[in-house]
Amino acid sequence: MISTNSNNLGRWVIIIGLLVLAGSAGNVFGQDVATGQALANVLTALSVTAIQPLDFQSVFQGVAKIQDQTNDALSGIFGIAGQGSAGISVYLTLPQYIALATGVDRMTIAFRITDATVDTMNFTPSTVTAADGWVDVDPNSLPNTLVVGQGGQTNIYLGGRVVPSVDQTAGAYAGDIICNVAYTGV
Image 1 (cartoon, rainbow, N blue to C red):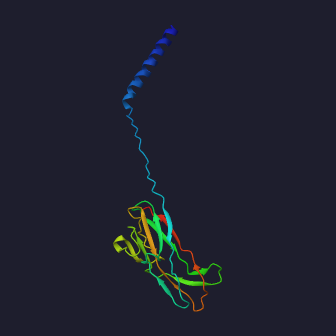
Image 2: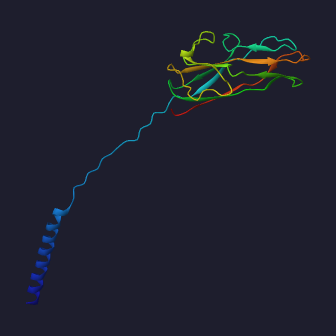
């Protein structure tokens, strides 16, 4: 008899357990899963090239000479290639002097606040207008709203002024002009 009661008790425990499980099934909430994506588009790498040096040609001792940025053959030209219409920052490191290769003499070089032009349409220094970019800007502080031209190219035209002393040593003088560019993320 004890075994019959144990069997009955075991059956009742199973039945009650099943009823409890069946009763709690109504409390289970529906679940769902969604998958999103992370996307990125890597822009064309920026490159900068010194296309043409700022050339003052022959100068006389004691006579300052200005080279305008609108001269097609003599203005300094930097070409910037990258993603069209992307915002960029450009910083020019301009020398205070140019020197003989031997280093025995140097000549003052200066840049006026109107000695640079930024051309986003790829014209020439003599034909670029304000509608094509930024005209007559300070090369020491270029605008912070510069962009790569829609065609993927922007040019910077640079002028300046050399001031040889009255006893300037004859010879070929040179100095580095450095152009740094970076995307701004705009």
